[in-house]
Length: 556
Ligand SMILES: Cc1cc2nc3c(=O)[nH]c(=O)nc-3n(C[C@H](O)[C@H](O)[C@H](O)COP(=O)(O)OP(=O)(O)OC[C@H]3O[C@@H](n4cnc5c(N)ncnc54)[C@H](O)[C@@H]3O)c2cc1C
Image (cartoon, rainbow, N blue to C red; front, side):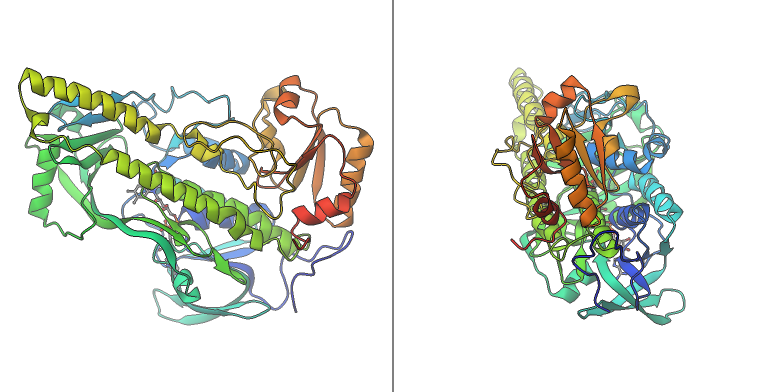
């Protein structure tokens, strides 16, 4: 059976489970991106099977910042309470402190509030959160597992796959028994991380810089590290020596575990334990008792896949882009991929998505991959730009003046990395083949500032409505048509066209002056992922053409 039919017609809905397949969507990899994809698909009523080669244990947590947009998705999924209840201390000041060592000179400091004290900004119903991967992945896993139709299979590795016109034939291996099994899926999504077998099997290359640094992360336990120095409780210390920025120490669980990163260089370098110990001593500036828990060498990359998939196979997350962690964009970018792809897969499987809908995934998300990879690498270059020289450590008035100047300049420079509302909320799909442009230009795309806009392709802005609801709470499962004093005949015309194509659409009339101003048109049509598809003061002359465009049925 060829699936789906591009024009299902009114009322015709293909079943969520296509014929002749074991699962509609096979997801490979249960990192945060695969789990988010499985959860969002399940939430949309789409069955899927996720295979993960490991048992799900986190050997060493990598991500810990859950960005504001990801928190907006968590709000939609009902996960905000779980994130806020994670055992990361909510009274830990999130300061970034620039030092020569923990017991040495403090060069500068960006004071950041604790998680509890952080304000929800006016641009969003949520605030960013600190929730390390060993706490966040289980939240996503429980969410995915709770969705009817989602199956999670750990210790199951994808070993091979091939696709034909009707589906994907995958082979998986049980990590315990070695037994192999064939699984047929309508679609396969590789969320299998930087070394993606899916990407490799498709023969898709990466564009960019393969190795910015070979970095070594060391998690060590020391319950009273804070008592050993005079810099106080803080989230992150960035350590500069005469040669430049050479390491960081991060409060990875906020209490007794610390992540020490030896930044390294483009050339590979392995460290013996004795060398690591000497470097920890240098970073703290004194001898002290601690226990090394894990050592993880990794490569900092600046890479984006040449394509985000091929035919019925897609890639999301680190499989599609590898970012320097400077900025904390990696997982957050990947979860945006998952949300973008999930509704397109759902629409296609449910029969209301057109034949060009899934192709829009690459068109929309790859430019964002480039954008975020570039910004992360720029953050890395900023962080490592100072070359202080020996004066940094001089105990003289000149040395003191030098440190003050350097500290002030570095503090100003690093603000680019800490305040990135524009990166998280300002990404837009203005050139997307499935958005309907209205000729107006979007606000300038700036990493540090976000200007709300309903220019088609932009994230539909947040406004608090009555009774504590955000406009964002209106978006999710289908298209949302918002009306600000619109003519009912125009609303009816769009509703009728959507019904004719089986496109789920709900209309909400909003009587709210600030929202009407911000949304700027009498009618704004928002996609299931919360981005604006179309806007106007009245229905278009051909509402069916609009609906066909936004569901990917129009050939452009
Ligand atoms: C030090 C550091 C700090 C970071 N901090 C942040 C941060 O604060 N915020 C942020 O957004 N990002 C951060 N990142 C980046 C973030 O960790 C990654 O972008 C994110 O983990 C990617 O998620 P993923 O699900 O795409 O891939 P992964 O987390 O790599 O998961 C891929 C999964 O696929 C599985 N897999 C691979 N091959 C197969 C196969 N053949 N069969 C079955 N399973 C397979 C793997 O076992 C793995 O579980 C950081 C990265 C580092 C290195």
